[in-house]
Length: 331
Ligand SMILES: NC(=O)c1ccc[n+]([C@@H]2O[C@H](COP(=O)([O-])OP(=O)(O)OC[C@H]3O[C@@H](n4cnc5c(N)ncnc54)[C@H](OP(=O)(O)O)[C@@H]3O)[C@@H](O)[C@H]2O)c1
Image (tube, rainbow, N blue to C red; front, side, top):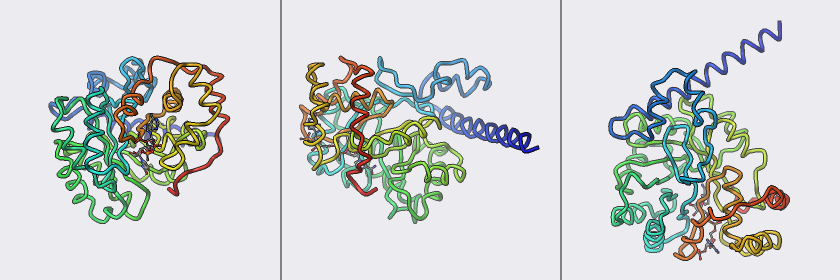
């Protein structure tokens, strides 16, 4: 009897998951003139059984090392490497985004709390790169959760680039579910393409996901060789959610320790690349999107140049062995 009950529950759960992901595919593919990708449009109109025959459906979130992108569970394509803008002043931020776009980078991470969304938007508007080629992530801070509609409109107004590619909740906090539901509405209204979370781990996800309708497309968490999240990363990926790492070099104050690490430096020397490139490539080979922060155009170019070498299984294992479960920030 218990077994039959367990089977029935599993079946009901799987039905629920399918319905949830279909809801999101429909909303991503149904906006006129904003089709995320041809595959997504086809997927949203064919029966579920046929979807499973496409490579994307079999491997949601699998990185494409030819195009340097990942297809999110929302159907939109996102570059797998880009630029983080935390702690950059408006002027630094404008110059860094400009350098990134000139170097071919197309992914930018900002947040209400970084106070530089306006500079990101201005650099994008001033560039020659078509808006639809650029992917901008921004975040709502918990202090904004009491009026989510106003917070979403403020982000749209401050960025001033038409729509937001990805909006995240910056941290868990009072009102986060209601804010996420308002973000779901903004997706339906065409203001935002994809939505996700930041600083959500296994317990937080277990509690949060049953309360919302759209599965997050992205979870952005602290990830670097000293804090690798070996259980959290596959847990999130197995939900069909793309993982993105913040503080890839440990954040300011820890970069020299990570970039100067003997193991990482030896691997870098063997490939004729820098330690920064090894760390970023290690992330990509684990299926983790990277957004290193930088105000130095040379570093920005270097951080995009990750596809001329490949780490061996042994090198991946050597870096895995550097994990200390040591966070470099409190959240
Ligand atoms: N969701 C969250 O709660 C959260 C929290 C923190 C950060 N983030 C995001 O994650 C991004 C990355 O974190 P972060 O910027 O704080 O720290 P980070 O990327 O770990 O480190 C940035 C530092 O690395 C240096 N650097 C960058 N590229 C380099 C290279 N190729 N060689 C040598 N040094 C290099 C930068 O110096 P130069 O300026 O001289 O290049 C800067 O001092 C942030 O910018 C932000 O977008 C999110």
